[in-house]
Image 1 (cartoon, rainbow, N blue to C red):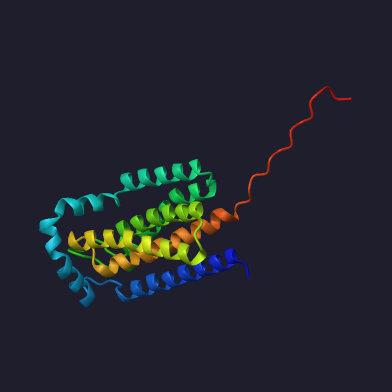
Image 2 (cartoon, rainbow, N blue to C red):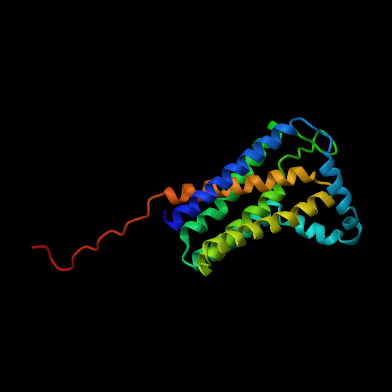
Length: 218
């Protein structure tokens, strides 16, 4: 089996697992309002950050706001184009848009709320957004650097989890989400980016039109 095919299979398997976690966790919190034990533990662990690092938390939270997220996606797309990765350039905005649609659809369907019925919580859109942006940027990085397959996978997974984790800490510390909401957001990002990559890859490459011969026709 070719390494490229193996890499795609591993990515698809990871996305499938994330989809199962996303849906399974969503069913588990369906219509819920109360935090789980792990949510309470995460809230307690991050409680001190609200007073000591409030401005930093808000700065991290800002990354998940639509205007900022779209701007970052455009910058990532431009970076991809400058590096000659046109297909990956399309992934950044498309995956972000797909993620936004998925979050807007899943939140009312699952109906988990925090701090009142108007605050739909699952999955965390901010965490999903941060993970999408980080994942596409990391895909560009490994495509340029081309480390070994295992090193590339480790870099992409670690970087994406760290980016999502930073946003998750901010969301929990700001009491905007439960920790389990942020896990759902991370899983959603993996699914949407993988789906987008596959859809973009399925689009046939544009073939060049042969130049017309110069000179007068016979």
